[in-house]
Length: 376
Length: 93
Image 1 (cartoon, chains in turn yellow, orange):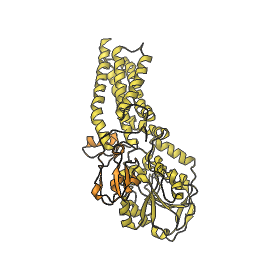
Image 2: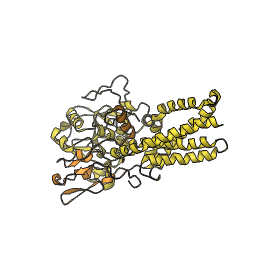
Image 3: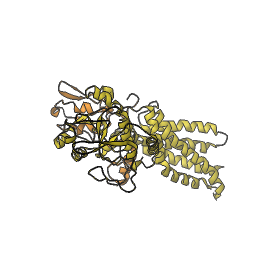
Image 4: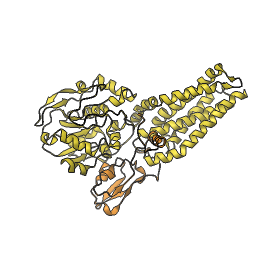
């Protein structure tokens, strides 16, 4: 379920605790999406269960687009509990997933045509992978939902199909002990669920491996940028102030003119680190993201210097080169959180080495830039 | 994951051979093909591919696997350093 992983690393710290039992009555500012995917109900020995369809409509598209830009991301939730897809009976498989609506939509779309039960855990609106890391997609929650939904009365078998990327949060042997259901880890991606079931609950090696294709990297770039808007705004304000510093103590004209150039350089550095680096990730040399990002920023800055060579003096050119390299390197390092292959030990090692270099380059660039104003 | 290799020699994953019963859960849950089970024992084939997600140790019924799990996310680690606590994904991005 690569789509699910693509939610990025960070959990929305909304602090809104959803109720622990039943379908859950959402708090006031919670938006209900049920009418976009529920089209009836199915009678079971444990009572009626809402039936969902597999169609993805315009509201689902709009919702997905919005969360990719970080709009209402921590409220994009489905009520936890049991759902029926198609016309499942007592032998139908039980698919367990997260209550992030983006995730839920991928599951119901990708298993279209299958008659199955979908058990939605309360992961606080976070995708499977990240929720597993935090433990909300976890052993206790699986047992709780199975018990609350009275699943043992709904189905005759005793088997749950969990996404493989939920495994960091769930101990299969503990779930069995806790509620009598055995856990089968299905494929990483929801689109492989049908082939997995058709093959008799067997995964091909490819189904077990995560990948990170260009499109998956690209859809994550908007959230990288929106996440940086606030610190970038402060940095831009600081740059305008610094830009005014010169032989005449402070000049408003210089603040505007030089500040504009500096903010453009900042924006270019952010784009290099948050968009160019993720897209070119496998082809940029180096293992460390700070190296990849630094290279992308440095090369783009070199082009900018050549393009502006008539207008920029030597100190300013050098400052631009150093600053864009540093900004892009730092921003690219943050993309580690969105990837499915960087280990925390590795990221920490990289940061201990890269942060002092990035800070040093930034200070040097600042000195050259401000100092350059006095040399005119 | 060709083209997607991260830093080498840092992964904290360890497998205690004596405790392993060769059930194969680690091989099943690992999204990076770190393990292979042969002749009733799991082996670590590719330690450097490990991203320390902790799925293997979580699902090892005999606790033969140890790993320091966590989020490989710079923002989370930075938050942890600044707050003096463990890395947390409080960044919303």
